[in-house]
Amino acid sequence: MKPQTIDIWLEQLGKPSADRDYLPGHARMHALLEPFKLQQPKLRMRVAGTNGKGSTSFMLANALQTSGFKVGLYTSPHILNFNERIRIQKTPISDDDLLTLLEQVMPQALAVGASYFEVATALALIYFNQQGVDIEILEAGVGAKLDATTAVPADMGLLTPIGLDHEAWLGSTIMDIAHEKSYIFQDCAYAISVEQPIEIKIFLHKKYPNIIFSQAFEKTLRLSGKHQAINAGLAQQAIQTLLQNQVINGDLKAFTKGIRQASIAGRLQHIQHQQAHIWLDAAHNRHAIEALLPSLQTMQQPLDAILVYTRDDRSLQDCFALLKPLSPQLISDRKSEHCDLCINAVEDAITHILSEKPQAHILILGSFLTVAAALRYFKDH
Figure 1: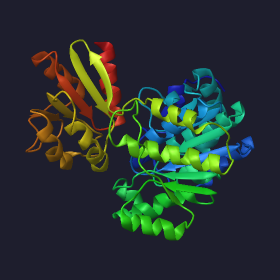
Figure 2 (figure 1 turned 30 degrees about the vertical axis):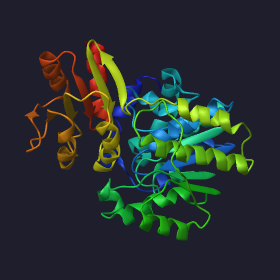
Figure 3 (figure 1 turned 120 degrees about the vertical axis):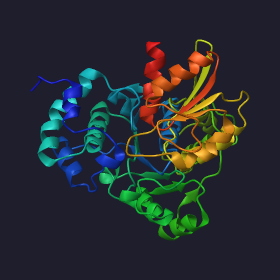
Figure 4 (figure 1 turned 180 degrees about the vertical axis):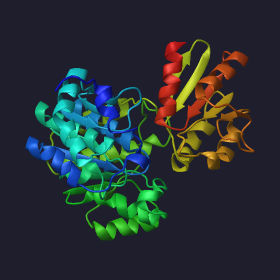
């Protein structure tokens, strides 16, 4: 069956979005994977949390692959194309390999009603198995208890900072969400978390007595943002734990160098467009924006404008008051007393700012979709 393109296959699964796409349960994943008889890799690691999952996963992958391990990295969402979600040694899956896998997986996926994220997860696991990776790193989508990434066993679970997000699925309180995300450790030999609010920390320690809490990374990172030290510290603690338990061999200094040198798109990513300086961040909830604030407050160059655009089913209006003191202009597609200008599309907002001040310093944030739209704009212009 080869009449379809990658996009046509994926369009049958609907528009991807964690809040709309999440289908709790593991039965569909088991149905997708069963025909392939996957072999357990030498090491499988799962990463959950509210924010910082992707950054931690990328830093961990960079540390391991630069030290000689063949690493499969599965993250979401993608920025410009689906292939970005599935990488081996930093390289996204090729169109040919992806299309071949889709042709094998999609008939069963449609038959069992699998979601976009479940299909993406199955494709990653099958591809990693076929390519014989040493280590798999899987970033969870929503929660952990019934997330597609926990449908397969893992050796180590990592938990990034927890905040309020996906409340419709995970619960309305921070403890509800912590309970759901704590299942990232289920049946894992090793459980590691960043420092959490005290009530979460007590809960995690009772549920997983052997849990380790990591400390912030103390060395300079290539990644911008003071909050990245928390994610880097989690990645380093994971490496140290694996070395101490002789799960992997290698030089801690080399692994640490790999963490320090990791770079990730859409995390305070700086680009220069003609005379303008642009920073892009996929921060999509208050928890993420609060984590960004210390870095924004100490930027060497003041911001001329902050553009906040997010998905139709979300709103960051409760963050406008936090951001407004950092720039003379705050622009969004949502009206607010703190919004200086309401413009429907981020592309139009960029055009407006640069027409007034070609050398402007601009922060653009709100979601991966916003980052993607901005990157396409600068590429086209």
